[in-house]
Length: 210
Ligand code: B1M
Image (cartoon, rainbow, N blue to C red):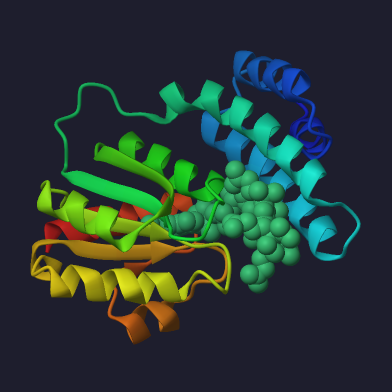
């Protein structure tokens, strides 16, 4: 019987090889990729985040856990992606300038690919100019992620840069990340906000349709 709690624990402990082994075992037992992702990997990282907040673990432990989590998501990625589907459009996604958190952004990218979008991954610490260039290169949606309250304002700066470059009307802008809210999205003039990767994929489909 697959033990998703053990996957969470292995993420928290930063045990990359164990994470890979347990993820493969769970999949072989028929557990869905999305259950392994949400109830195993993401649950572990969320719990670790609480310990980090309370000063019970520090940056090095979180970095090792992030590496273990990435090893697990790499196994799930092909299973979460759609096969032979015509692209719904291109989403250029990145973590905003000053912000190095990329796990959530990567999950959103995977889910977007899973429902049929082409994803232009701009990486992390992405400058407003890089988002503008992606819009000029034909991206239909600009997706920004921020995990720090100090980097959230960079989302507004990026929207302003899109306006100044005359490309704001050519793209939809969607935003997300732990400190981001619908109110904030409304305040800065983003077209949409979503709280998690699965709803981000649904949001992108709605945005591309209008
Ligand atoms: Co950082 N960190 N971190 N960190 N880190 C947080 C964010 C923090 C909340 C921890 C805490 O104190 N509780 C805190 C921010 C506090 C604040 O701003 N209020 C914090 C801090 C303070 C810092 C540093 C400043 C610590 C330091 O150096 N003293 C530093 C900053 C570095 C920088 O960015 N300049 C730092 C560094 C790091 C590591 C490098 C060690 C590592 C990142 C590794 C990596 O990403 N490669 C790290 C991590 C891992 C975390 C926590 C523990 C986990 C983040 C994560 O991956 N969550 C985090 C605590 C927490 O969030 N609970 C914390 C799992 C991920 C699946 O969730 O990213 O929220 P999330 O993504 C979700 C949704 O938000 C949404 O969908 C995703 C999937 O469901 N979503 C979108 C995300 N982007 C979206 C975009 C969309 C739509 C939805 O549309 C485009």
